[in-house]
Image (cartoon, rainbow, N blue to C red; front, side, top):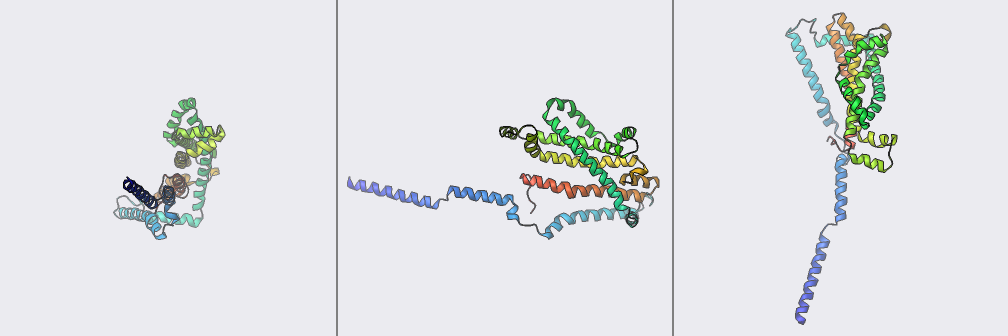
Length: 316
């Protein structure tokens, strides 16, 4: 019996030593969790905040649009040389460039651009002030949504130029006509954007906000707007596009010396003179301004918002 008890004791000690060794060799679970969190943080920060090399930025972001523009200009010049159309209908890139050079020498190029951009920005800011509370009201009040929601969708699909004759009758040949057309074009897009953003908010966020005392305006400020920000930003981006398009439509028709000359008015002046080079130059200016506003403001803001919410990976 003594020998069997001694053997059992030795076996228990051996198992205890093995368990201790296994415990010593097994990683600590809290350490694993901390390491996992650190790894996720490093992944979320884009590999420790390493900056993208300038050469890679030039190669991936700057060079492609330059190549695309060069290809378009080359195809344009080849079409001009092939005489597909008479030169008064299809001028060469050089002829259009001469129009830009002339406006620059006369000091009118920036004036034309600023006249339209200032109108567009002011109209867009007013559209935000009107469209944001309207969108929140439609999103949160079922009766208002049932009454106004379809109307907003219909207004968004209505061509902006359709409002110009009515606006001229209402406001005459004044800036009020131009801003009315811009608002009627931009407000539905902004309102629908925030409605879509609010509809995508998880109900848990709203309940958590109410539990924390967020009600009324505080709920809008601290819960609804931050949670709906991606959809709201998409609506703002589309609203700016509609603002710019509506502005050009209004400037094409509303003519008055007191209003100054914007890009739309400038294009109409060139059309009256049958100057196709000037018409194409103005079209290019309108396109460049629209793309520049998007690249310099909306795209960086959109990337920042999406990245802060983990919806967009950092470009490496």
